[in-house]
Image 1 (cartoon, rainbow, N blue to C red):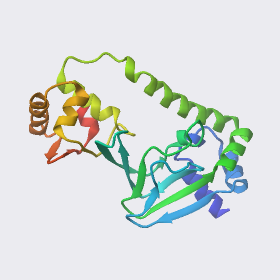
Image 2 (image 1 turned 180 degrees about the vertical axis):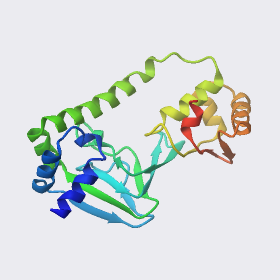
Image 3 (image 1 turned 90 degrees about the horizontal axis):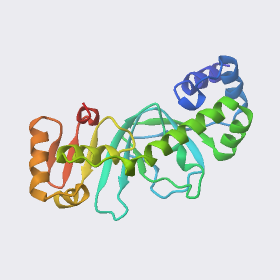
Length: 224
């Protein structure tokens, strides 16, 4: 029972299980084949293009996510803390593979749930089925609007939009490894103008510029 209670407390942190009563969560904890994974600092959790055959719930620790552009010309590195569910949208669909690589920054603990167990829970619990559908639908709706947004005439706003649109989570610390010429191409402006905008943002203490790398201590500050 104590193990079920600890699992109950961990599951409560995740939107997938929101709305379940205590009795339902305790029943779920006792009847579901959860796995448990502990990884030390610096270990790979998943790699880009790995097949996604389970859900990975980070219950303690900190992760580094690395996502590459299709042409491998730039990448973004993000830091995420528990609680976090790694790419639940990758479990189903035409291409059930991870789109980013994930490694541990600290010793990290996970609850794992196989695809078969997820399908059983979706069948047995209407609330979990609705929560999962809502997560996937929200993600699809947000991404579906990207190409229809009005392109800003303000270069600084376009640069900020580029940063935000290329992150898994719109908050926290980010690092973009991208050349100035590539960023200028992505936002449709000259290298000199982009350089001026970035230097102004650095002066405002929003970013830190390095050679071939842009550090963003707090992405949410760019949106204020």
